[in-house]
Length: 173
Image 1 (cartoon, rainbow, N blue to C red):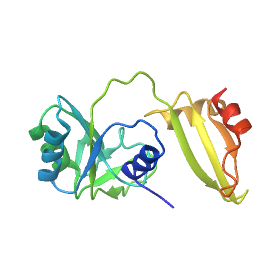
Image 2 (cartoon, rainbow, N blue to C red):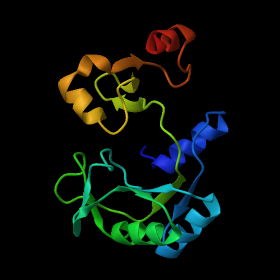
Image 3 (tube, rainbow, N blue to C red):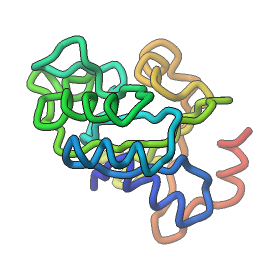
Image 4 (cartoon, helix red, strand yellow):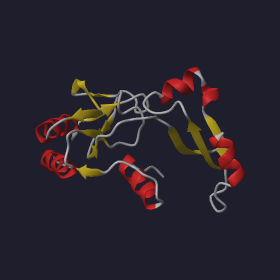
């Protein structure tokens, strides 16, 4: 199962995890309205595709445009969304053809004290999910995986039982 960033954040929010406020937009006008609703003074417009590396990825039709854009006005949000929506975002995970951006997440800007990485993947060899975490996460997780894979901690778990406390402590340590 693949879910978009905004869907993952909604799940986290339901379980009490603090995440920035965000609004999904499927048109440029919706993106501008979302910026105004969030109240500024800045926001981030993020392409929603099923691939990582969106911040460093580029829009095939507009190579100077990336899949994550900081904006300071409703007009900026409209322009950023217009540069992404309906176009192909090419990332390290999509291949040269990229993926079409059908929606963007307009998210309230915030100060970043620390970036972490958390992901769940299915290990087909083990036949189950693996939780992966790193304190070196964020936009450069692909580089961390390639250059210092020992900084990404992995823990298998059974979906019906969940993560046991000892496993969570191990990952947090």
